[in-house]
Image (tube, rainbow, N blue to C red):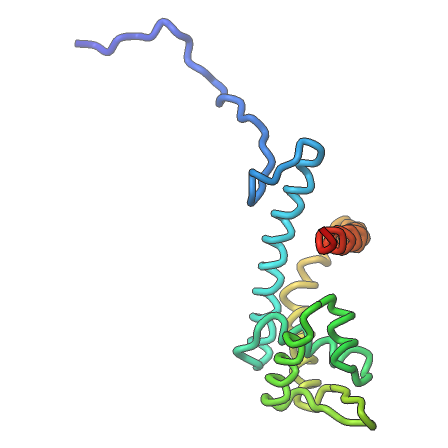
Length: 184
């Protein structure tokens, strides 16, 4: 028996999908700003990708078994070739829990890439020569794996500059919102 022909014409286009925001927590989507929920999901994904990147890049540079915070602390301690106090590192990195920074500093000291010095009561931290070498190797790998990918797209570099400005603005908004929530 031959197959029955449908009286409906065959559809040549896929059914239209309803555009929904891509979010991690649909219950938080506000009718006033679905974009903020989409941004937060993007921030989660980008933050995790960035953390994975810095860990793998430093591992490729030869310094293995570090957390993303450890890597970022090492970079900050190396920044501008000036020793830094624990409180200053935490402040600049916007880390409220100084014990997390302290733990990273102790770990990095144990690996011989950070050293502390005492001037009166003040303890400061700076990179050792080995630490500087690892950071220099990290930079080489970063240039080859990440920055070279940006060279082909000048518009993307411009967009990154604008995104940086927006992230600073949103960072201030989140900090203010955190202070407001803490006072409730």
